[in-house]
Picture 1: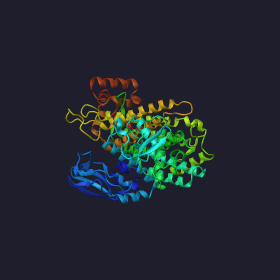
Picture 2 (picture 1 turned 120 degrees about the vertical axis):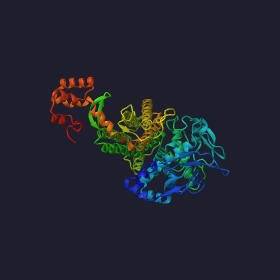
Picture 3 (picture 1 turned 90 degrees about the horizontal axis):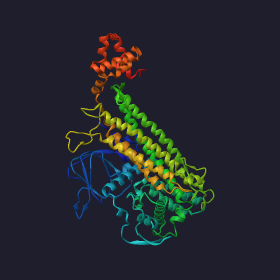
Picture 4 (picture 1 turned 30 degrees about the vertical axis):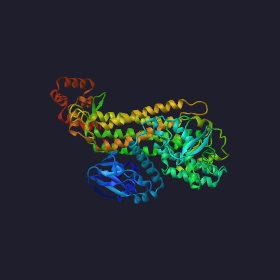
Length: 619
């Protein structure tokens, strides 16, 4: 039976916890049961608890004029409710009602936050998970699939001016005129940059480092620097995320994303400094927040930071997947089976050896991703437009890199040639290639799992995968290997994204690659899908695999593949003849050996012992 700590480790928002931290958090949870129809939480009330559903189902709905809507989403076993409590105090914006009786684990939000507050690095990682979870839930509640889904909301407005003239911006918006134009211009994918909260947080950290460097160089005042820093820190914590609505696919080499960040930080800084949004004489998006920068150095730097941060979480998830394969390797250590080459019987091995090989093949890709990530540590901050450093003061580059190191903990270095670095995207290409390599390995593993589980009566049927759902709308009793199937599809998408990255990288012209937004969209999607896919494979498949020991042994006992062990004793030609006769007559090898008097009983036991063939050199 799973412990509370083990249950917690399977909840995505808490998977950043180390084993001792999970044990600490487990002590904050208590068991609670809700009767069918009972209100678990109500919209408009204070969000005060994190709830993990252990059994039963919960409807999420909204109350309009005292009447409940139809369920927006139904959650069940393994789902978490109230993740936002980890971010801070807020109200529920939906109502949760138990559809059936529900068994749950419940923890007080204040105590959970107190635990996170003791470890800033952990808190930032958990925030990223929580924000990602909430955004995915919001996407399910209100899909952004139509072109008009990114249109500005009506209401009171303020007038802002840019190169093209005046434009009305919603008065309560923190973004400004350039973001508003971008929202109108780029209704492409329906995916706003806010769906990548790590990207927004990384941009905010870049702006903090730039502001401090600009303060030291005398470009901006200490007051403006403090305002920018405070506003940006709020964004790092996940606040104002709804203000980042520019489509992730955009023209302009990422200028719209950069200006979205500049405008939101500027307007929030103005509020913190005691001014109105839009009163830019006190803190300006371009001249202050974007001081000494260009999109051409800020955007790729933020993307590299995002990839490094996301890579850490991906590697942690992949290591958990490796551990799951390795645990099955140990569990199946004594399950003898036939190895196969060309889909034909080869020689005996153990199921444990096969699963250990799965662990090692993924482990090797972890090393590749670590190597690829190191190529992201060279940045071009201070190069501004083309790498010459125009409009950046002397000493700025070294200072901004040093501050970025302190803010993030990553050992960033200034690229040796900023002109070359401004147009170069090879770091993104290399990292994406490692993701593609991992995808190829996972496809092979999942294909093997599908073959090994095939049947169950007319296939290999060497293993059983957890039964996740009925497999057919017409064939009763059929259960399909849906988890390996979905992982293959994830990997196909990642391989397609890698091709997109390669095409975008080769499209660079002269001093800039304007295709970086599609590189960002492709790589960040690939990391997210690989991370989610790995967790799905581990939780919903690998951990629940069982072995059909008798079936595996039956194949060994009735296979002519064991004849290979006779070659050193009888020679290749006699062994081949023996195998051919066994196949022709249907007799077993041992039976024929005895008939022909080729070996004594003691020799038969020694040479044809299957366990000896699986470990010819000993364990």
